Amino acid sequence: QVQLVESGGGFVQAGGSLRLSCAASGRTFSTYSMGWCRQAAGKEREFVGTISRSDSSTTYADSVKGRFTISRDNAKNTVYLMMNSLKPEDTAVYSCAATTDYFGSRYPSTYGYWGQGTQDTVST
Image (cartoon, rainbow, N blue to C red; front, side, top):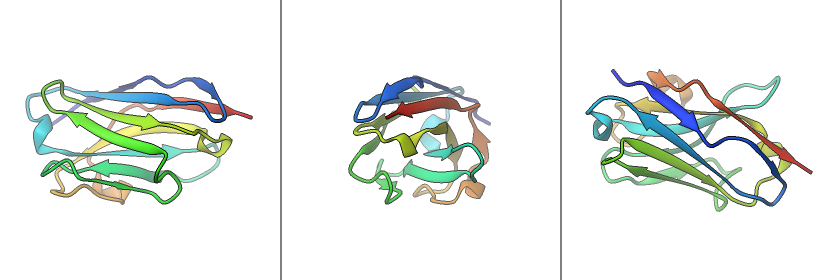
């Protein structure tokens, strides 16, 4: 079992950057692939990106590709989401999640563990 706690959310102007962190409890962090999802007000949760437990390879949603970067530090039990060139449509609650899937996953239903989420607001 793993517990996840996000931090780093906030308010930023369009074109700005934010870095989110997700700290995991336990000593088995390296055995989980990690993902980030977001949910805007009145919308369904959507996949943002994932990083595999195998080789830290990453996959991103088309809407964030080239702007967002996921990385992980297994020594610190932490996964990061660096968000650049932010747009107002990126405003959402961002959550990290963990899955035992070897390569990570685009599908939120695959993830068995979730953080509480952090609100990110991008103004015009």
